Image 1 (cartoon, chains in turn brown, green):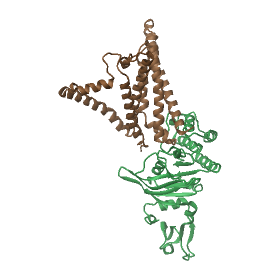
Image 2 (cartoon, each protein chain N blue to C red):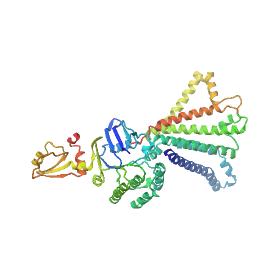
Image 3 (cartoon, rainbow over the protein chains, first blue to last red):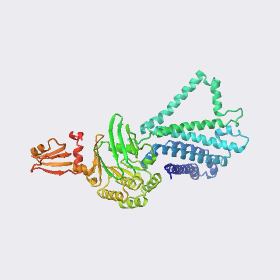
Image 4 (cartoon, rainbow over the protein chains, first blue to last red):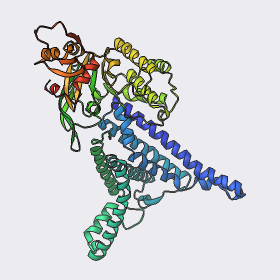
Length: 252
Length: 292
């Protein structure tokens, strides 16, 4: 077995076990805890296990999990470098493992949405009737879910790899200061837009519509443009994480 | 045919402090090295650089003429056991053995099980819950069982009691005899490893002071004892690396050839042991050894 295969197998096994544990914890929290309170409060007749199972939290679990596992860089780097694994192989194995986990998570989310909630959810609705062939629309739905989760995971990997270069104190500073800076930037952008009327500019609006695959009729938006955009965005985030993985070193 | 590790003009700075200055060294295959130096001399930094855990400020490290940086083939032939704990605290010892086997591709499980018994280690314990000594033992067991051909041991007996140290030294000799590979041992307990090491590298203030076989070093190091004035006269012009005086008696420590000068009857000349040689070579008060 090549070094990459063994590192990938190690990384993937670890991630899938953690994902399973996360699902079990969420399941216990959403099913068992309300059941417990229903029993002690004497409202067991009002408790419905199907309501608990149909909770919209499950599809979010994969996203949250990918953020956490994607951002976690340094602890695994320590294990890898201790075992003579290069930064490049660690990065490649992590990207591949995350893509496979994302693939599995996407299938879970779609099956869950179809079986437990009988629906397509969220942003996918805008693109759900683009193709006349229903099978193609299911594929689009899958592609959207997969690419959004991939973009989330790659962003987490990029952010995690940058944060891993700082001390714990530096990481906390970045984690707390960045959202504040983003909020300030957003407020400034809103004010700037009101003054400058950026969205009055036709080309900006047209470009945003193009990125979204906008069509006149909701449900018939073109999914290909945003999907390609997500692929490009994920590629950029992966490249950023690759660069910062290359800078990883054992801290003093 | 392996040509070993070659370190060329290696320097390392942390912020403005230079830890290593222009290091040039070779680590040959199938040899046991003693990497000696006082606290803060730069030994751990050198080992960290060789195992690609940190980056050099200048210079390069080659293995069989290939750069070691981010090279899986090469890094898979190295194992660094250091004071720094890089293993996850919540992982059980036997899981760590499995992880190592998976990541290195091989692991001598049978020998690891034997060592677990010999050291009295509970391999179902979580790594982080072990004492310092037992964490050292876990790392030593892994170091002796991985398929790597270059094993770097940075303070390998940290926290070990005398019995465990004895087991380790015996196992080191045994495993080296069965499967010769390079061991680079960095320790302060020089007396305990003096009989094991074939080559000695002494680092002082980030510079290589000595790089020679232990036999050659001991053959060239002398303790000259006798009346103070006779000893002073005898060692005049020699490379004196240290001395001790008790009343009118003096012991002068010389490193290097004695040439053919006549030896007075009242002085005795003996070879120094490695520990004595190291102490005198790295003594900050002495300045002559800088010229070695």
